[in-house]
Length: 580
Image (cartoon, rainbow, N blue to C red):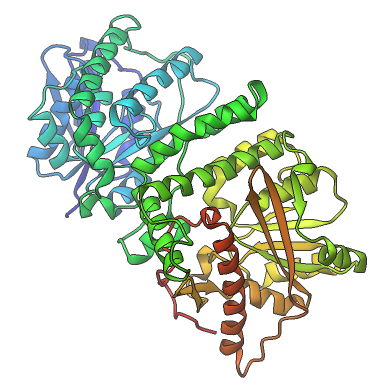
């Protein structure tokens, strides 16, 4: 799809702000369509001067009477489409939006030409609190109307439309013509299965700024719009639910912000999968723990999981594939049957694991609720005073053990984590306990600097805990195949190379929920891992297979507690598989 973009600016009596807005936008070299929505004589005079000053780049459209922001935007979109442009960036005339973000919107649109690019406002102290809190009511209604959290902010006046999609809608459906337009067009585009991509962007309210939002009548119009949209959602409910269970058209499903093309890696790589769930929802769970207690709050998980089961096809499919592999490698009738029920129980176990992390960091879990299967191995290590590398996995709940260790143990434990993928959840955990970030180190790969830093920690007698069943984003090619649950699966070289560099003992660690408590399994893996240069690939494969065998054992022991919701058996792209 070709990409010829322009900018559409609706304006009504913003004579003092429009000059600076236009000046900040023309530097990007895009044609401007300024739509005068029946402004007064003073504003018309300013616009005429701007049209003369930027002749050849600025097209001035004038509506005879004020029809509302929606009417002006639709007129601008139609004019841009008729002029042969494929995309239009809508931006308000009042100067609230940061024009320097225009290239970011354009880049996202070029990478995803059939997606709507939405501004996600970042407010400073200038935002009126009544306006800020009032927007959240509309956000909730939009989430209900779309059965989705995809549209994070439906009222931001900084957005980019694919014109063929937007004009097809406004020419076929009667949309609101005033402040309700921005909301309604997004909901209806969502119903048509259009992709949305959010771009965080600053929004500043000028002290002497002019607002045309009519607190009474615009709220009445928006309320009426939500009433129509809820009715439309109910009428479309079977179709919308069916859409949740079926993939989008390829043109939309493959679109990702910042990527030039879709690839098999985009579906399989866990770090490309967006973190689901809002920070607000997570904080509500944290608040529930403090007010009504963990037991009552835990019941909220059931409807939450049901929603994500219905809307999360990739995770649901990954769960099914996992249970298929588990059944293939196990005796008949020893494992859950792949399907909707097992996927629900799998996702519920994951949600409960996250909830247990929250309760542990909030101080609602006592050490007595976590016990060791056998303390002998760990006691011997601690008595020796030596540091070690401890390899865990996404089976069970390592964070539970770390939360309790932080509260009382004198053991020096540092968790090496890939936290970028779960920043929202980790920020909520950090808000519940000031010690959350202590002894936690975020990494993106195991490069020389990281290895040197870890070597110093081990030399001081620390235990470094990492996971062995995910590949860091920058190490997609450094994997080796190991037989896991009946089929070859890629395992990262990183843990074994790191153990070789550190020249320290290596242990395995699992924390599994058994009934209402957690049981810790700590076992020796290797006194030292050596990787001779001559046969390095064979040694890496042998260590990876040994780890995969133990992981498989514990997966059979706790089949619902392996929390890798992506195609673990897919071969990573981006490098030579199994290279040295």
